Image 1 (tube, rainbow, N blue to C red):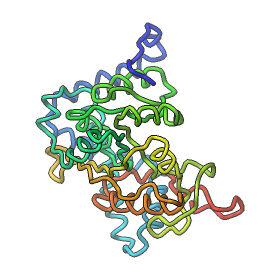
Image 2: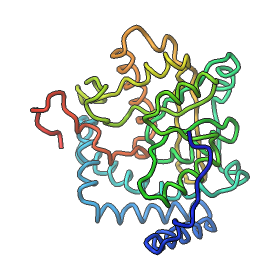
Image 3: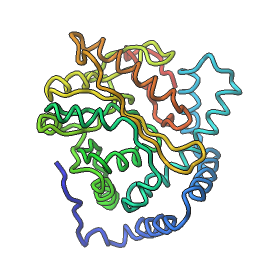
Image 4: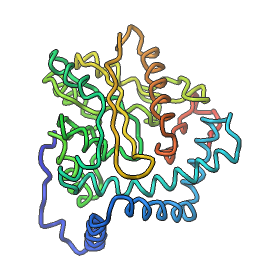
Length: 307
């Protein structure tokens, strides 16, 4: 468990100077009003769309696979909006890591925090079932304004970025746990405490079942939610975060705990989880991270790639 960002003078090595310069520029943008940041982010996103060919193709293919009922023109419009929202997410992260609490509270709305409070008061841990929405960093920071929890994260390979993300995320979290440390997650839930959990990405064939997601009949889906809820004796609460339509702030909503979860069958639990993933994404599909190759793992290794 990581409870403090570890700084060393090695982080000032010349090979990191360019990165530190970029960090300095990023922090200067904190002087801009939020709506100006978002306009700048939208421009960055459209520029990235012209330069990041492979990522554009991945996002376009994901939309085609998930929403075949849309016309090509509708999907292209959604794709363009998605890249604009992706550019804005740069500033979501900057704000989440460096805004003070007063500024966070000025730009946030929370709904459903009573579900978290009631679950913890009953002596049960809380698993926030989230998806990789683009403002998720700010969603975690906002959640921490009333109930700091434990973040599950992937340690960064770059030591400067690892220091920055740990320091930034601990502004709203009690601690961070590497995503493969199941034992520590269970210990936190039995404390009881709050952790984030996502099951909307392709983590490969290990511990995965192939079940429907949107219009894809066989998406590789992890079943860790069942295991975590059972071992941690915890409740699962769907968690949603979004940026306002007018770019003036952020909203998060925590839904009531799922009834009868986990059930008797982990495959049925995973199907139920994918239904929640669909519901959360559908609330604001332009603000979802479509750049991930969600359907790269096929049921059989001989099956042709969907990409």
